[in-house]
Image (cartoon, rainbow, N blue to C red):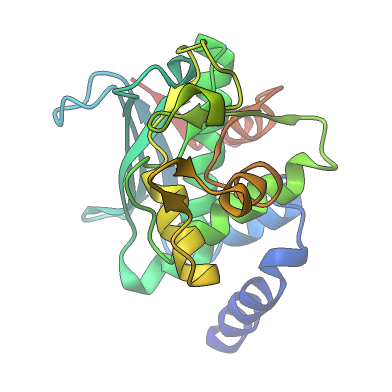
Length: 233
C-alpha cells in the first residue's frame, strides 16, 4: 500500500505540467492520497475576516487537520473589480499533492460563478511555489475555452505607456510582474519614462501574473459536490 501511494505521488509530480488539471480521474487520484476524508470548504464568513477563504481539511476519526488554506480579498486597486490572492499556505508534507492548484481552481470557479469577475495573484509578490500554478493557468487559457483572461493595465507610469490610457478601471499594481521579469531577465524593466518596451512586450505575451482569470462552467465545484467533498459557508 505504501509503495502504491509513493508510486501515485511520483506520477503526479512528474506529470503535473502535462496533465489536464480538470480531469475527474486526476483529481480523485490526488484526493485519494490522504488518509481520512478530504473536505474543501468555501467561506465568505470566515473568522479571518478575509472576503473569501478556501480550506482543505483532512477529517479523521479523532481530529480534523487543515492541509491547505487560501485567503482572498477584493483588490485594493481598480483591477477590473477582480479578487486577489492575499495569502496561501500548504504544509510541506502535502505541498506536492495538488491541493494548492485545486484551491486556486475552486476559488476561480466560485468567483466567476457568483460575481462574474476574475481571480488574480497577489499584486506585490508571488512565491516560487505559486508562480508555476499561474503559468499553468495561462498555458491552459490558450487552448481551454473554459478559462478566459483579461489583461490588467499598469497602475504606475505615464498614461501613454499604458495599454488602455485614460481608463482607470483596469489599472492594477504591477509589482509582482516586475519582480518576476527582473528575476527571469536580469533587466530592470522600468525607467524614468515608465515601463520599458521589453517589459511591456513580456507583460502582454508571457507574463502569467499580468492577468485576471475566469473559469466557467464550475466543473470542479460540481465534481466535488457530487462526491460530497464540498462545503459552502
